[in-house]
Length: 297
Image 1 (cartoon, rainbow, N blue to C red):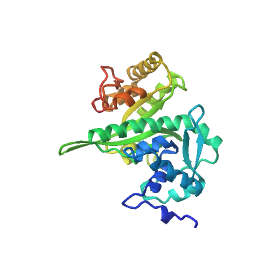
Image 2 (cartoon, one colour):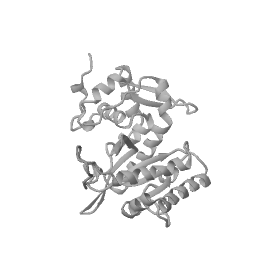
Image 3 (cartoon, one colour):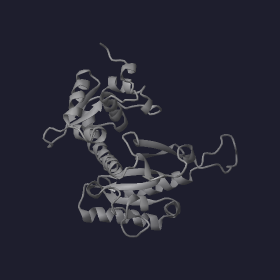
Image 4 (spheres, rainbow, N blue to C red):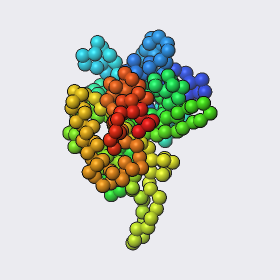
């Protein structure tokens, strides 16, 4: 029988195959282990691998085998899977992007899976602490206009609710993943882009003189999200130098310094947040100071 969008639309009880399709649409790609940790962390891994293989037989997902990984599979939506997922309510307004071949998948794999690693660290910490942060509270590749045809693309936007008794604190963050594949200077320039987004105002069309308007980011966020850099892929010394370069950009660039006075900016090593949790004292404030939890930057 041919699958239809209605047959895969998530219901309140969220059947696992629906969640798998939604998670792959949301995150672009993930390994079996990552999907297990994201969706069913307290059950046997086969609970996830069995429906994945069935979805593959139906032509809705496919996978690529990671090199030197004991045949670890990274899963992604096919064109048919993306067509179905496009109508899922949880993905409304965010079209999924199919990957058309194993070759295309292999090009996207290293960065995409590293972004998922960072999300899993926050999700595991939230479960441990009783906070709210689930599979759909992390949106990769979010684009924002900067004017003059330029755009900032955040590696991810995170939504997180700290639940402390009767008190609830809603937090948002732009997350940038650095695998040490670009120069330290190019990484630090990302801070300028966020500073430009913070100040960017859309001017009404047809006016000769600019008039003051609200910042463009208020269309999406009640408060400008904090900015977190997560670094990996190099020695401790080299990662420390890259964090120092981010701090130097805050100190030396006028726009970035203005951003830092209003927005929390921090950096951490991915392996540290995986080992100690993001709530550990592993985040270096980019304005200077001792490492602390991300919520205390």
